[in-house]
Image (tube, rainbow, N blue to C red; front, side):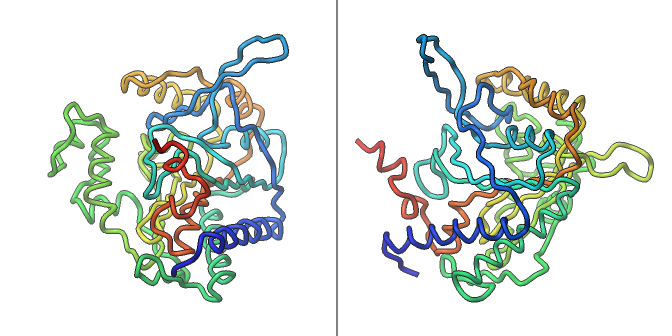
Length: 339
């Protein structure tokens, strides 16, 4: 589908309006949280953008532009807020200027207290099917020459199943780096960490097998890949699970959403953030203090909650059959910073 640039922006405005209507009809409260924060998230492979400003006394204040509104939204939930959603502008350094990446992009996050990732799976299916009907009058659309069929139920595969099926690796026997490397049959980066091995296998042997004509929910990630997510239930033996209740949604072969059954145990969360802080240091990245207000919010009582972050720009690209984000955005980074 070839759309003029003005037509694209009108369609984007329609998608935003209908997305808001979808959540409002389901009783969600729309909120706005700060774009600038004193402490960012601790994800080892994200690079927050620092900023500095001065108050009325010319005192300098340093902080970061958000990579996600997640911490702020969970703080609201701990205060007793009901179902909430936010459409936010988020920023990440070291992103490509084009393709499916831009340093500044739009994200929608929503959270359901007293729910888990299974309920968010239903929300996500219903939202995207609804938007497809709005734009195309049916639950299927064309993207990059391929018809994507949204017929429910959507296919699902666990990360453990995907690794075994597509790479022959049993993640149950890959809990430490040595055992993981023994099973890998492709070349790995020098001095690869456990995460490096996971990503190398996932990107080269797993992801390319995902269908282009159907959505795919990839669920239950190993704990090292899910620091903010709740563990799956204990094994029958009583042993702690190696997996967490996280899923990612792939649509047209593109990853567009990341969901957790949120971790509500403050002690466990602080432990995992300390591990991520150590990993950031090991990787030579900027190291931040842990957001104690976030930990305190968990201590004060975050209910069992399902939450998700969905990339709105990527969803718009799919629904409007646009292959490069630079053709979607108004003044993308490529245009703003060209010489």
